[in-house]
Image (cartoon, rainbow, N blue to C red; front, top):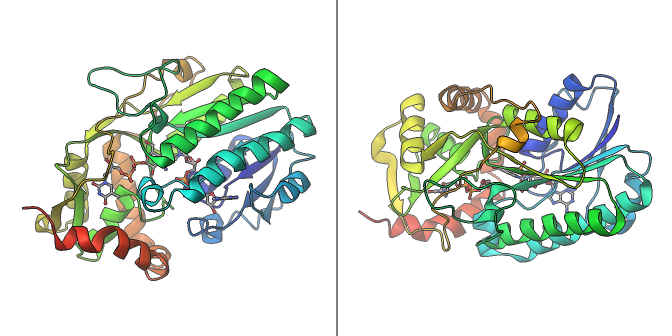
Length: 339
Ligand code: NAD
Ligand code: DAU
């Protein structure tokens, strides 16, 4: 297999490159990544020395870079995206550009290059809020409510259109909230773990009663690998762990594992359009033989330990441009934090 991994220097992409080298030892992998604020070659430490891996710095929104990179690959996986909901609320432009237009440019190149399989990594956020006790399957309506979710939904629709119109051999996975090593510390779990380790406040949006389905990154990568191998072309597969936890309880678990002081918790103004609950029906992916191997308790313990052991990695990030985002996102919220 000659695999092109777009966005392979980000959180899930870099974990997937490691997974792919073990799962398909005879494969060669091109990591194609723009290295935005979220892309980091340190995420590929130890991997870039592997003779099976090549790194290309490139932008999926650039037709010339993409059409130079795609030929000679049998399989393409697209992780490349702007991925953080809060940033999409502050500045939506890059989300529409990368998550929709970038996807179209990759699909065009795949169409012309006779690839065997193109897999689009998408998200459960495209379904929007799911009222309890419902779980949504792949035929459920798309009701995205943030600029991020709407852009990802646009990408999914283009993928399906390229399959129907041009017979591009596509697959889509819609993953749940993912956590684990190498996650950029803007998302709930790594932000709160690193804030605990620095004795900084933990800004919980609203009442903290929102529910998410937490998927350990190794299980997510295994799910993507399974769909790439065995998924039916043109189909979409939900990937979730059915580990439904309220944010409030996730925060308590982080506090307990990191030994931080519970008085760090602050309830702050809510995220606009905040979805209360995500919950996936994953029977279609499980029918391919995919299973979850990590409990939320084990995955969270491994993740807290990883951030404790990799302080240089996240401190370098938090001391860079991250500071400007943090100030824009949290300074006012924390100053006005609710009782
Ligand atoms: P991330 O933000 O950590 O990484 C994104 C990567 O894409 C970075 O390496 C970045 O440099 C690269 N990138 C961004 N724009 C690019 C462009 N124009 N051209 C080339 N590379 C570009 O994201 P992540 O959390 O690893 O998410 C990866 C994918 O999985 C995304 O498509 C996201 O929507 C999806 N997803 C994420 C989660 C989650 O909980 N993190 C869950 C489900 C699905
Ligand atoms: O569900 C899959 C999605 O999960 C992915 O598609 C996205 O790329 C990924 O960012 C993630 O989106 P969320 O918005 O659910 O994740 P986030 O970590 O930002 O937030 C998780 C929950 O925690 C959500 O209810 C908002 C809340 N939260 C988050 C932050 C960053 C807080 O209460 N405080 C915070 O500071």
